[in-house]
Length: 194
Image (spheres, helix red, strand yellow):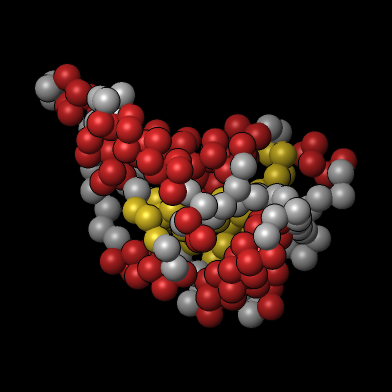
C-alpha cells in the first residue's frame, strides 16, 4: 500500500481519545512511508490524522471542494487539490488511493464509507476497506448491516468486501495481508454471468 485514504469526522467536539488515536494513526502511516489522502480539513479526525503525518514528516494530500476555501477549515500545512464539487472530491480520493480506512465520523463519513463499499460491490474497484472500530464506535452500524444481510437486503457475502479492526495494529495487519479480489453483485443475486 503506497497511498491510503482516511475518512473521518471533522468535529472537534468528540471525545479526545478519538483525536489522539487518529494522530497516532497518522504518525504510523508516515513511519511506514504510506502517503495519506484525506479531506483536507484541519479539524476533527481529519485534522488529527494529518497532524500525525506532519509530525513524522510523512506525505499527505488533502482534497477539497473549492467552496470549503471560503471557510477557515482547511489544513494549510498540506498540499491541497481543489475540486468543483463533493462528488468530484470523493471520486479523486477513490481513484488515487490504494485502500480506505474508515475512522469514526458522522454523515459525511458514513456517505464516504457506503460509496466505496457500493463501488466495490459493483466491481468498480478491488481495494481494501477497513473499518477502524475504535471504542466500538461502529458496532451499531455493523449490527444494522448484519440485520440487512440476515433479511436479504444485502448479500451475505457482502462481509467479504470490508474488514473490521478494533486496534491500530489490526488496521495495519489487515492492510499488509490484504489480497485484492473481484466481486460481482449481479452474479450473486441473480445467478447471471455478468
